[in-house]
Picture 1 (cartoon, rainbow, N blue to C red):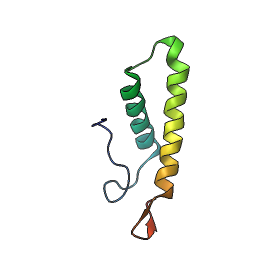
Picture 2: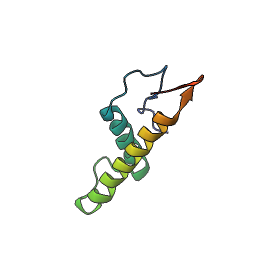
Picture 3: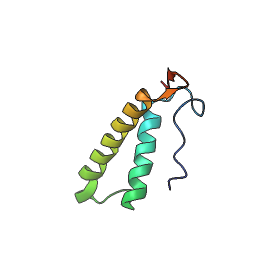
Picture 4: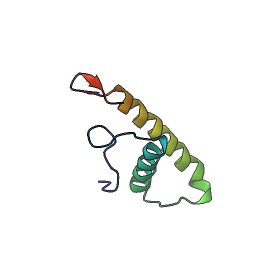
Length: 72
């Protein structure tokens, strides 16, 4: 679906930053909304979705275990 979103867990990525997580969330929201940049009347909903997805992504990465160890 979102080919430009890279895998953000070891061993595919090391030292994932908040910016990496937010960039992935932004790409996801752009893809599903069909907007690269939303109109002013949709900007708040768009930005809120990016932040919520970034938080969920960070929580997921923190919770994943890789062969008996946490991913992050």
